[in-house]
Image 1 (cartoon, rainbow, N blue to C red):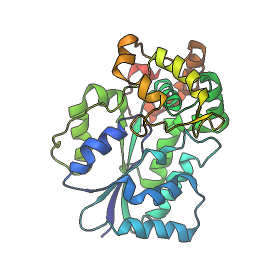
Image 2: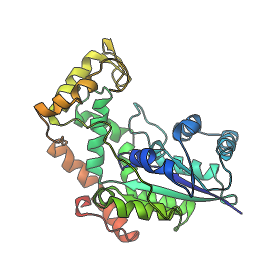
Image 3: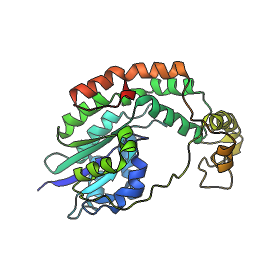
Length: 301
């Protein structure tokens, strides 16, 4: 009998962290393997060109967690590397390597994919880039992502076509972020049912850190020039970009309650850039809706 495996691959900014934190650890029908237990293996899957021997090593490590229940792996990095500073492994190649890790003759693999309207998703990724110490303006940052091939990752119709090709038409579940946000309980029930769970566990969804607004983005990007981070190694003052660690960081100040009391307005990409990005994906979204019978919200068009 084939071993059943669920792989939730993101995308980034589609409620993946909420599910990992609040829902997956409480499931009864599957065994959720936390990221820390497979950190090296998931890193290699995301970034490395893997020989057959390395694929086998990843498989053997994962199988140490397999008992009687199906297993669940969730890591949004498997959908691509939008924070990489150079061209990295494509998310299509990552899918192909997931198939190599779990060959069809031994494993019954089900893929969970979360999508979000692309301009909003890329806006959220840019805000996180500034959170982490980035100093580039939105136009330059997005141009870099385009040059690295990252923007191609968000043609969801192409991606789902590859998922179907590798794993089968009935072997994936699509989370539409906007619907998940509006109808959380129903969408949660549908997702968990896909994995054989018949009840939503009790959970609390406390927001860990509020994202920068327009004022925080303006100040944060400029202040980041002073600080030495992975995204800005030329800075003068070494700092941990996480507000949770260390005594001080720009994020700790700009994400404080008083900062948002002084001023908060949701950040948007510049209009011309937003329109340019929107135009890149409209046809892809139409294809997704028509070919895969997906009822996308109007914001996708």
